[in-house]
Image 1: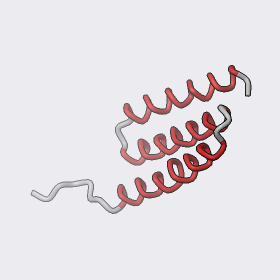
Image 2: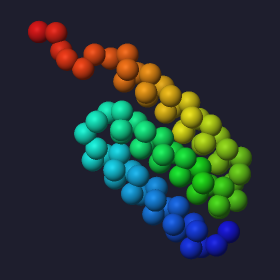
Image 3: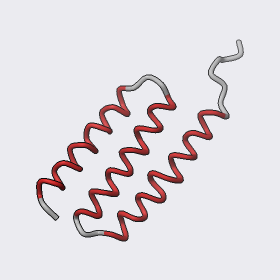
Image 4: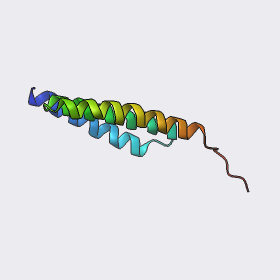
Length: 81
């Protein structure tokens, strides 16, 4: 693929990583982290590693994102003192 497209995916992935670190809400951070994994999958596919991109999309963006969201909803937000 074009180097411009690869650089664009890399830039978007870097922006998503910074946003995931800066956001205060845990649910938003989990969603942005799943977006980062999907962008990494697009980057792998654009570099020619289709099998790695597919695995990253399924495991990184799909399963891990769902597990993060389920873990956030199953935890309590206030401590019991």
